[in-house]
Amino acid sequence: MLTPVVVVGAGVVGLTTALQLKRSIPSLDVTVVANYLPGDDHISYTSPYAGANWHSFADTNNKRLQDLDVVGYHEFMRLADDPASGVWRKPNVSFKTPNALARVNGDPSQFREWFHELANTRVLQKHELRPGTVYGESFDGVVISVPIYLSYLVQKCLALNILIRRVPAIKDISEARSLHSSGKSAKFVVNCTGLLATRIGGFTDPKRNFPVRGQVVVLRNTVDTVISVDGHEEPNEALYIFPRKEGGCIVGGSFFADNWDSSEDRGLTQRILQRALKYVPELVDPNFKNNPAFLDIVKVNVGLRPFRDGDVRIEIDDLKPWLIHNYGAGGGGYQGSYGFASEVVKLVEVALTKAKL
Image (cartoon, rainbow, N blue to C red; front, side, top):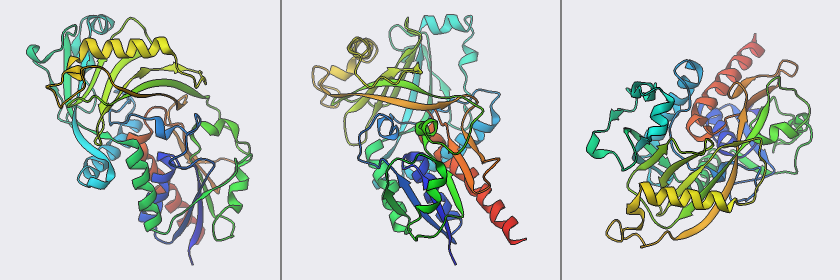
């Protein structure tokens, strides 16, 4: 007999968790329920607004997050071999301005990421630096075409008979137990509600959950690698450019905590575009990949990153042993999704083993 499981949330974390649960424990009958599904456009449905790439945010002391992100690195490198996935191997090249160097007291060794061996990081030579930058590194990475990849996850779920249901907004997490497609009460509910975890009752979190607002410009112009430039005058802004496999690129960005505003900041848009032209002039070079001679804007996206103090929450609820939390990924939902899912799988495996004793 199959064990019914409900995953609440159909963003990248929820879909990946559902997929990995079924792959790892075939005896589970998994249903995904969500108010918003891939293809929907709503500010609180955060996954469609991501860049996205793999660039771990874990610092040198955060071994837990490092281990979670390593799982994702290997998985996305593997997925890049599947043309249908929307995942594309691309060098990730980061540059530092004099302002950034000053923040580390002129010691560029402090820029070295913990994953330098994992991702074959190398320090750029002087002739490779862009004008206005003083240091740079490149590592073997990926770019994820978000619309394609979310659809890919849906198809992989459906192929394993994971049903995906659109439901009204859940007010209390206990409601999810009755939403399994079989009509049976779910043995486990996995809470992958992201930013909406702050608006659902029935459980508590000792840590603060909050949005970090981001804004990007989608262009028809493109580049050859992932590019980032750090160290601008505005402390909450940076330049990053992600080429998309289907053409064009995403140019950002900003990081404004506790800001729910979904409207475009036109001043920010202009600063983003000015930085892009300053540091990446090939964007408007017709001799480079047939780019337009101007920045050809498709649209401006405003999205929210689901942050949580103390990193992602992956644990069984203290008061509800049937409830497993998996939310609070911040800006690392895509890159961490497989690592997060692997932890949920372990929790379910342990719980099932205990139930048999």
